Image 1 (tube, one colour):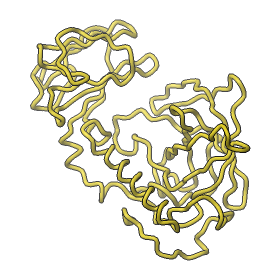
Image 2 (image 1 turned 90 degrees about the vertical axis):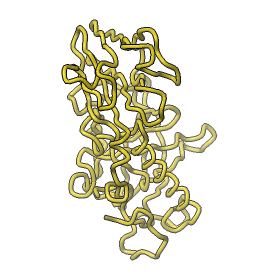
Image 3 (image 1 turned 120 degrees about the vertical axis):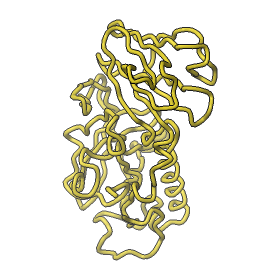
Length: 304
């Protein structure tokens, strides 16, 4: 696999993407400060994977039917939890779109740092519960996916058993993959149909398009909003042979309101795999059809 901490050694100039300019944005392949920032970002990315509630800790995904579902480590539990969880830790009551979590005892479930003694009705996606106060306690989150209601379970011991040096790989650093871009806001009311790996379709507000030049050609990528930042979900010609087949994600800074012509930067060195590349228990969105680049972007995360 590529070195997880690439150095700043000189690269073959023929490998530099066409269109790269020496006076462009700071490039981690040649600029020590940008290189340090990229390494810090990579370290934080791996830390999120290996966290007690990270993608590597997930041990199951259960979709709730209407009625009651008991969660616990007992063989008769409809929603299995890892040992040493209680035999019966909680009961989920689903009534259509409404889900209520009922703790089995006064100390069986914790949320927001405190034990739960009363039932909780779920009103937000990703509401988290832990099986005790310890940082490495098993836990679960409640998911709202269209008409689906589900529970994703976590066992932090699973994450600690995995090796990032073997399972996370990056392309070697080459200059030219940090490129200027121009953000063009979407028209009022424009939406994009976002399809996830379950086949669900959600009409999502479009933020706009990022226009840039690479490989000697002008390109555009559709972006949606992710908080105050822009989010891009894309495929390139290396998706499948060299990186995760469904595509990769990229967060992009939204242009400052004072920036001329919507100027921003695409740091393709920060392309990373979606959660579905790291666990079978994720429900990732697929890239919009217009976000397909005809060349291989040999930057960012790749298949180990």
